[in-house]
Length: 215
Image (cartoon, rainbow, N blue to C red):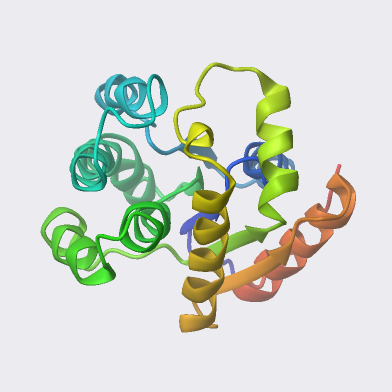
């Protein structure tokens, strides 16, 4: 039986390799003949991309955690309304570089707002919608930050928050992944791209009964 299209999220600390692995997974879906879109957060729709620039550029202290959270969910609502939900309704798979667990990790836990605050806003904005699978890329935060700095893209506001903040983000993601083994898979992202890709493809194939293969 053909698996029903769903949303798959690749999440984790900045510099973990989410962008690369999202693109590889998207390509594998296309190679296997599936309709699939690749998107990202914050962003993923014209309105959400405008909010993205406010969040990822500039001084790390220009927003407090609550303002960040509200901006993130404004962008997330636009992303879901304009991109994700229409794609799923068309029967398309959705691969997203980040989703709601980033808010839980960055603002809720590392940003000290608490998960209860995040969940209240999440319920209002997102409702009961959940991705079919969330893959958390786990890697030492110092290695990840070095990778992110090497990109030199200018979208470095969160990276500027420092190693201790990102250590807390990593621990937050590990905590989230452990909370629901059916929803989450923790992926060791310390290896090379092919090794990480193999773990991701195995998790996706097992979860959805697919036979995705690397190009």
